[in-house]
Length: 238
Ligand SMILES: Nc1ncnc2c1ncn2[C@@H]1O[C@H](COP(=O)(O)OP(=O)(O)OP(=O)(O)O)[C@@H](O)[C@H]1O
Ligand SMILES: [Mg+2]
Image (cartoon, rainbow, N blue to C red; front, side, top):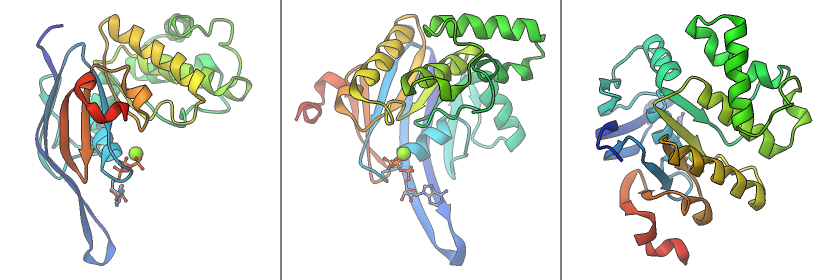
């Protein structure tokens, strides 16, 4: 594993401001670095700020304070358009509910993020088929998501996340809607991707899912409470 930093968070805070002058400080002084090739699980109670943190990591949202350096670029103060550009170039996001376009084919879903690359239709389809193949979905390219099982749909989402060859794969409870056997299949895929060099950060409530990662970051009430090897986190096995 190289020591090349992919993600550097320094004193990240996030406060949501609501109507009526109410505000809620959801992330407090979060600091950590993720280096190339790491496989990190983020855990913590419901409402502790995990998704808020993932949305910042994924350039879907900005921190209120602090510095976020993604692949050597400071991204905490970028405009929405600039963030979208960074997102398309550097981030592969996998969501709990798959987030597929239900009226489009599997090939279309996977090739869609490549539109912004200025690739020809043919090149986009070829790239999509390569990742559909890699996710063991060969033959399904012209079907629509509803014709596939939940596990297969999540594999389509992972193929879509990979197609742009992002710097990092972010997954927010990617197995949250799947049964335990299918969860294990998906986690084996993430493990293979990580072994092939992909950097992965994944949120989960499930100790079994977290145990596929090497490093665990635990968030409680918006603060980092634990950051170390998964296997050293005793409470995981309780
Ligand atoms: N857009 C928003 N506006 C206001 N408050 C928000 C917003 N998004 C999240 N919050 C609040 O921030 C806190 C953290 O939410 P977040 O979704 O990050 O938690 P989480 O750790 O992902 O929880 P879960 O495990 O249930 O997914 C919660 O109290 C939530 O109500
Ligand atoms: Mg969440």
